[in-house]
Amino acid sequence: MRGRIIKGIAGFYYVYVEDRGVYECKAKGIFRNRGLKPLVGDFVEIQALDEEERSGNIEEILPRSSELVRPAVANLTQALIVFALSKPKPNLGLLDRFLVMMRQKGLPSIICFNKLDEAEEDQEELRRIYAGSGSALVFVSAKTGAGSEELKEMLLEQTTALAGPSGVGKSTLTNLLIPEAESETGQISEKLERGKHTTRHSELFRIQKDSYLFDTPGFSSLDLMETKKEELRYDFPEFAPYENKCRFPGCVHAREPDCAVKAAVEAGNIHRRRYDSYLDFYEELCEREKRRYH
Image (tube, rainbow, N blue to C red; front, side, top):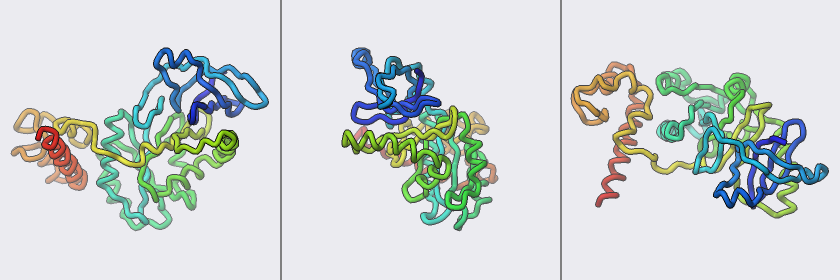
């Protein structure tokens, strides 16, 4: 049978099989011998050992389209970055950091602003700021359901990583998008309770056929970006039309004169808020480089 690993904990893998439900599986020793470990998000072939108990063995891990190390997950196709419009007020510098991180991981991003029902931020200004970011924007209220249908459309036939700081309503949004998730996770929780496994783990929620939402602790906090300072500019899509138009080849759009990106900022073609984030990150990377060599 073919299924997908939706949770892995304490040596057990919970595999969702279409029209059958969740099987608790162990991985065969052959994977250890090959230095291969099943990951949450993997498509696998399993052999059922006990249909009543829904237990089995993972026989084969199918080829991965993508793989992340931190968190250790497979076959993601996009990221959903959630911030609140108020309570807490959105930290746009942190949002920009999430966008950079996802680009470095090769994941397209959707920016989701939650708490539309108590919005204090100017939505049109947010649209202007992120117009050139390469990310779709959606405004929702997990409380009232406003905007949820538009968001669901964006998640169809995708495996989406859920990311964002605490307090922005990620759990409420997950419950809104996947009301039936509770029963599936309840089935797993019973098994976990029997084994007393309580580790914080990544989890894949099924929205509908071929559509999944990843909730993982690894995307909740961010360390410094995994990039060289000279390459950071490629993580800001707004800059792309101005590359090779600066006076100096290899211009990093920071202190150089006759810079096409800085001119675009002055002309209002690149939002200053995004450019300021770029400068902050660039200086951060410069400082990191200095510390490394001193």
